[in-house]
Image 1 (cartoon, rainbow over the protein chains, first blue to last red):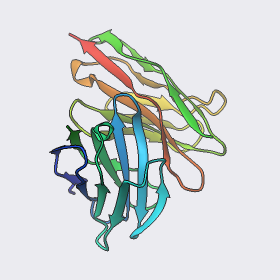
Image 2 (cartoon, helix red, strand yellow; image 1 turned 45 degrees about the vertical axis):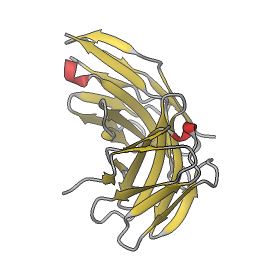
Image 3 (cartoon, rainbow over the protein chains, first blue to last red; image 1 turned 45 degrees about the horizontal axis):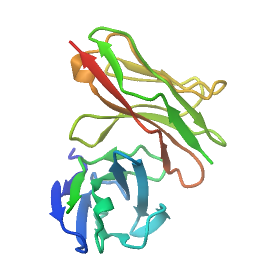
Image 4 (cartoon, rainbow over the protein chains, first blue to last red; image 1 turned 60 degrees about the vertical axis):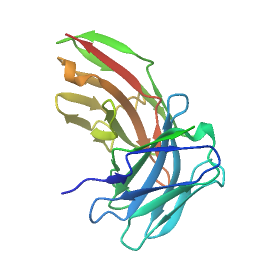
Length: 112
Length: 112
């Protein structure tokens, strides 16, 4: 069974640009969560989608947004990039809301 | 609110040593508890979990027991290998939204 896949694996952007990251969950998984990981702040929850609806949202500015498609694939978008947005962005999928989360390898975003 | 506290790292051990990484939690209700591991340059992998008091999760020689009386979920391994070098995260899931609450992570370094 294929795991969670994230594309691209690495991105370099400049301040002010926008970026879209993609996540394909494990087949059959309907929930997708996104996390930001930085050395200073650790793992921080961004948002969770279930059946195309945002169910939970972390404490991030409105520049961070996401969506989920009918096939459960999810994208997150960051607009007007700032240097502090440089991080590893992790996606996790789960079958149902109470099931274990399985993580993808992450997208490493560098903002110059 | 709910929280997870892990021992600070890095933890440095010699190969074949006994490992303990402490994790304590604060939660209302009856959370599920998890240990995830992150190898260098990779995403998080579920190592083990426990869903109720006195449950023992185990995988790859690692064990952790859900202790409700001490609100702890310490990770142990009898004989570590160099390949166990990674960052270990303790997490809990509880509440109506089942969102994962993360510890700060403990970096483990095993020297040959």
